[in-house]
Image 1 (spheres, rainbow, N blue to C red):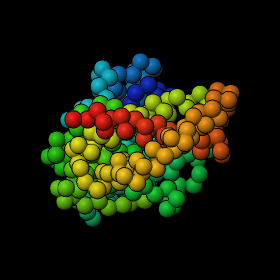
Image 2: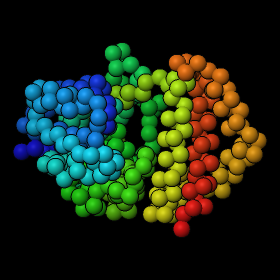
Image 3: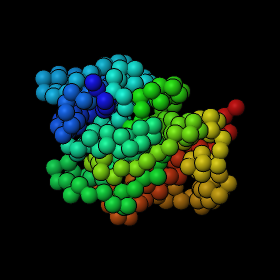
Image 4: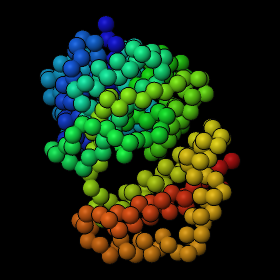
Length: 301
């Protein structure tokens, strides 16, 4: 009987996906007890060939679905529909689970069968030089339901209708699921031994525009989240409150975004962002988020 489903979605990350799938197959638990369900959301790179090689190496049941690009929420729902395990474990296509990963989710679930199980994640810049697999509070995330590493009974996620596909752009679709699960009274437990390495490659100056575009998309989906869940949690999490909006209104009037942009534009595109440059890029992305948030709030009905 399949007890656990590892579910992930991918888009144009073929070299990284190969490593991730290898780690998913290299689990200490009985291969008959779990499966891997992958949804390829319209990749145009070498993902199809990567999946073919993975099928030949899979040690557990492996289901791969290819679809036209429809967004992460839709792809997650396709994965949920294909899952056979009693519990579904969500990961992303940029995380490497440790060999005891599925077993640790199962162990925590045996103690708390109806609960969400949140696992630990260690951010790394290089998958070939991994730090010791020891989680610390430095790596803590307070998200109630974070699909980098989380599991829930399959029947429970299906009972709430899965992911809301109106979240078509980047951001908040997993947080929204967590809010609905919390409203249902589903508790969450944390097992730091259910551990993954979360790949975060160094940013370069040429990545800044992509960071800004992602921040703006996240601001637009934040407004969707607020409309669905107008509570203090969402106003605090999204920054759509008087204190944070007021502060960033002042920074815009002081032309801080312009100064940050000028600093970053002077860099060679291949410059790796470190120290003050990285802080400047993150600050500029934050300013882009709040600027777009104001626009989206004004446009919302």
